[in-house]
Image (cartoon, rainbow, N blue to C red):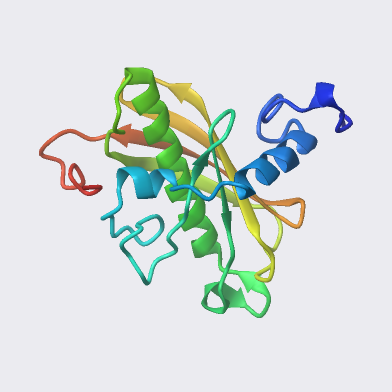
Amino acid sequence: MLGCGAGAIRGFGSGLLGNRCSITRAWRVMSERNGPSVQELHAPNSICFGCGPANADGLQIRSFRGENGLLMSFEPSPEHQAFPGMVNGGIIGALLDCHGNWTAAIALMDQAGEEEPPCTVTANYSIKLRRPTPAGARLDVSAEVVELSEDRATVRMVLEAEGKVCATGEGLFVAVREGHPAYHRWN
């Protein structure tokens, strides 16, 4: 593993799992942000359970731009437990799904040179629960686009707690057009 010297720190290095020092530094930079998240900027009225700022009973994730994608932190509540001390796998899935979806939407927006992201939906995603995820720890989720076309993006996500990878995922997220039931869901 690379050391944490100036030469080793470049965003996510060679990918989400490639450079631990870079990920740690990225979290420090992100935690200093007090501004609005991408959800608050682009979909303040969204009621999505995972990422909707307007859903008081939801997870209300807050994703921020990183060097190679989006970053977020999440503090699980007692009701997010599967059993004492461990986060429910469904909650982990929702965190990765919504964060991955926003990563795709922002990448598609940037690629098109637009000011607002297209409304995207999950076409498919999978997660690997690699170890039990502690409920009493901050969960750090990073996501980066690995393939981008005109209306879709494949995104890889990593969830860490206490410096250990607890879950990984990959998803395909697609921009929808007028006539799709989710087309206006963010505004």
